[in-house]
Image 1: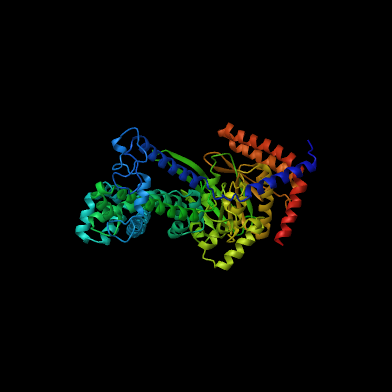
Image 2: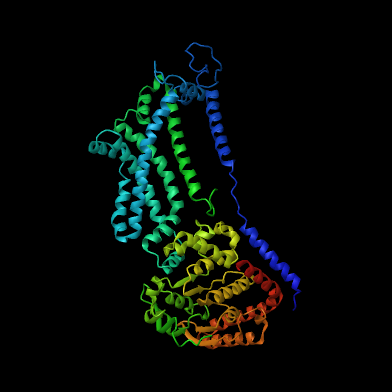
Length: 316
Length: 305
């Protein structure tokens, strides 16, 4: 069977074309889909919220209006969970943000909350960094020493079964009231997900890549920096995203025990106590705390995209 | 080729490898392997699946230790040779580091060898030109096809000028056309660099086309049944793929495989048969591809020079 030469030429050219096609950099276009979906979800929640109030809330009045002012809308039902005390109007919460945070104060509630959030975030961030380093260090030791892993990993796990409410006072007794205690507690909540994820992440390398490095006579240190660590990055960032939000929750809780006046923890306690006279303020605080967590999460996500760029399957 | 007698670069004496399972069951993977490989030789190890040829390659490369016997490489024990960076390894899968660009992958061994940066950059460029990937230095591995990735792996293995290149079925996962092109490329590189190559393969035509000697192994326990000298002229062009002498060597290797298969019967025979039919297909395809492959190669050489 003689194949005409030009046919196989074409075949070979086709092969080369396919190779080039495969080689075409498939640049992941920055997609607007996800942010838009997120916004759509927010809008749906807001509509549902106000819809419930439309059907079964307290009679609608303008935000900040005194009792006795004209009723704008009288809902057909009276559901207790939807009244203005339990579920204030979204617009009332927004309106409250731009009012003084307490009678006679100069700062608006929003400004006050943003200041408190930044204060809390600073504590959380320091704890997050220390906790991540601690987690990474522990995992590095454990993957290099079976003995250390067997001996200490059970304690790492046990440490997380202690309720933070029980542990926080102990830390404060030991270190005194102040930012130090808050940072320690944020660290404590952060190191665990990083340790556990990296125990696995530092072992996910391709065993053939290890053989390859050994054939170059690479040291343990080089195997760590050139293979184990880079291969573990997807695991690290998954853990960091959990740790970021956990560090904020930890800092808020610890601020209460640590008697920190400037952070979100104190604000939440105060507005909790005065909920009856200003439910919008507590809700506004919860929103700000949530937004803080989301922003911290997004910062880690952006770092993740930068570090993992060029790897297959990144950017979904 | 030089006779494998004077000062072999790889010297195996009485090498046995026994794998002991946890339950105490012992599998004899290799038995009584004696082999000398001269500097600059191209030696292929061929045999049916499970004959221990990959294990033998790994013993030479000190990635697996022999149970008994003596492994001398470059006049020193294998582990010493490994630490002296005498080896380059190419596996069946490219095993590229997917967080490194193509050129950074090629530079990896140079980093571990502590070469300075300017040299690493220069060397990676040379090596990628050598395997015709000069335009893809900044690409990430996943953006390349399988054949291109394997060429990156070859460039990486050659980058630090190892004395011995150990290749474990490097083209086993590739289609026939890509495989033939890469065979041409490996031969060209081998001729240019003068390195010693030990090559594990399943394919009889591939082994015959590339090698100066083909080591035929029997199934478990792996033993060397025959060493076939391939006295075909060099450089090996596509014309050789159609020559009488080429087919005669293929037949010789196949018969050695069958004979060695003896007691394992159908296993070895089946492998031989499969490879045989593959050889038939090769011959037809080789005739068609001949012109273009050599045209491509001259173009490549132009780019290197």
